[in-house]
Length: 609
Image 1 (cartoon, rainbow, N blue to C red):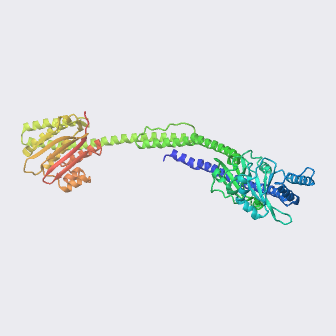
Image 2: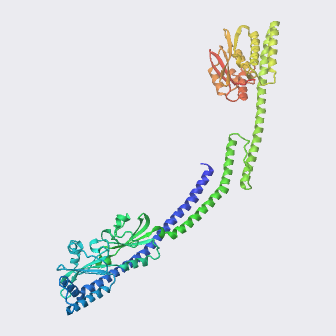
Image 3: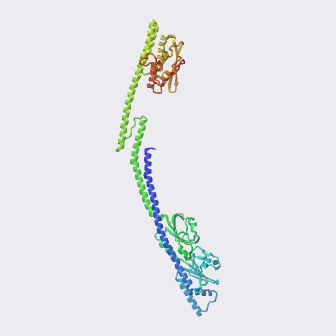
């Protein structure tokens, strides 16, 4: 991974991620604390609401008790029942006046609690008396007796049984009022006189919920859930009469029988905090399993928190933006300088000493760039000096090797001329001098490389001189394609190889020696083969030559270079010259075996003149 990516990754991991994690953890912790505090306050509020509802039911029970336990009220009802089938009395009948007074008393009792909207008495003898203050139709007694609440009221023998709105449409009537059922007892004998059904309009319930909902601005609603999950009251006037679990879509997630429970969930498609508070005290007053439910809009609950978090998020985002700007303007600029210097170093490593790092700015990176440029310039100068020194050294080595070859060849040629002169063979001496002049005309050229055809002419002249000397010792053949003759070769390359054949390969043979010089193309190279059918080279000397542990003279002749005058001086020098001039991939390759002759391969690159 590059330095820039590592710095950005470190910035992302150690700066950005911690800020995001800190903001997230702070938000969650703040939400948790806010929710806990709100739930604590809400539990106190729901306890207070539960006490108010309990007091409201108690008050209704007090007036119901007054109606049931007042002897005049009972007698009034009894007489009302008796009049249900008797003809109306005369106007001046004193009994009528008494009955009117008793009815006034009945009305006074009912009017003492304005929440009572109707009273229906089902007598044991089948008579029905109904006193109502709003249009209200009592339930038929035959249907009432089949209702499970009828049996529950009889079992309580005078204690009230409450039915909330929508819990039982037969009992709550068309107005869906809170309804109380209880047995009417005789005060003296406590004998049952019938069944009393009282319907209440609990306006106080709305006032209670409105009082505790003043600050919510419609973002909080209260539900009163009765038997089987039926909503008997909804401050939002939306779910009254519906099943709480089915409409709210929270079946199985809340237990309405818990003293207090709260959960965050979707309520009617809106994220809300739903809290339930079971009312056991009111249950003892005959209401059944009534539960108070509070639904608070989550956005309202976390409104202040959201605003605070929005500021935190804004500040965090601004901090991150500043950090990014800092990273781009300073850190990234510094990193880019290091990256440019590293890239320049790699280019210098590959050999490009012209590489320079741009110098911009006025900080410490400028010192680094200038130092690098100065260092590369100094290294370039030193390398140029080394190259020049190596070139001079190589040229000196070439001149030394070439100087070694020239006297060696001249010695052999003069020795041959001397032998012919001793024989008084002037014509042959003349021809040898001509050939020797031809050789020296090519040798004295100042060029290190000559054309292949010139090198072959040099070799022919040498071989002709040797044939004058050794006469019928050998014959030769030169087979080089004309297309290769214009290419260049290092001067005095083939002649020492041919000399090695004559001096070593044909020593002591009793048959005609043959020398064959050929050339072939091998890709971008030219390979010369100098082959003879001489005595070959011993295996030990071949191994020494291949290992490079001795010079060519020592390997082939077994004598030190300073003492050897005539044997093998050329082959080692040629190999060294080729490697120095063309590189380590070029040079000589020997293949030989005793009694099988020798083949020398000379590999040079193509270089047309």
